[in-house]
Length: 280
Ligand code: DHB
Ligand code: FE
Image (cartoon, rainbow, N blue to C red):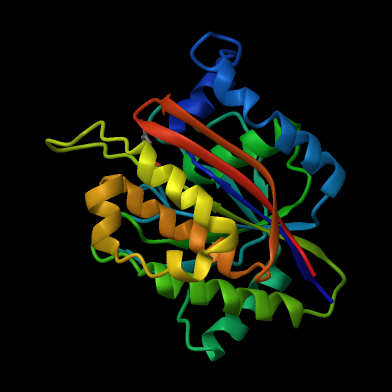
């Protein structure tokens, strides 16, 4: 049986990818950001997941205003890095896991969560920056990855509650897959940030830290935050945090917080990161 063993939450700031790709990880500005992931990379080398379900949001690389699925799952064999204007990042192509992806799709759709199927797409910084933070700069990503896209760009986003329940349905799907697989689920994006408008540059450390405090042990009530509160308190892009709730919903009620990191600023955002291990 496949099992979800751990969850990872992390911001996806594109400038982190640029810092890595241009050899700037040891500058005064970036060193503290990358230091926050040292534990996680070491831990990941020991955990050796077979598959990561990577919950992320596309930034107009695969989808545009012409087509905006609320939830979409990558069922293809592979997904190449997208060109976001500076050429594709020099990172490996993502190798998918079509068998598990199709199994999750049929299971969660039968559990009333409608997913869009993606057989072909490019993946942007939202997916590749978390991979770089957790795996470093290998020749090939060390495991298979199922991209799971969530619309948090175009109004209306799915509610935190629905995301949390979807996580539970994903967990049930994984646990009914026959093959023995060590599966992780990652929730990406966040923390507080707003990239445009009069409040551009907004960062709310109090909101972010309260969110981190509640993620491990108070997730049920955290899932009840209405979307408008994210926008008011964490900025328009703070809504990306609902993706962390998909990850959390897919874990056990009891989890152990193995690692937490919070840093301000990185580009226009607060960086938040947490590693949660399932407790039986
Ligand atoms: C920035 C952050 C994001 O989450 C994003 O998607 C694009 C840009 C930023 O801080 O610059
Ligand atoms: Fe973003």
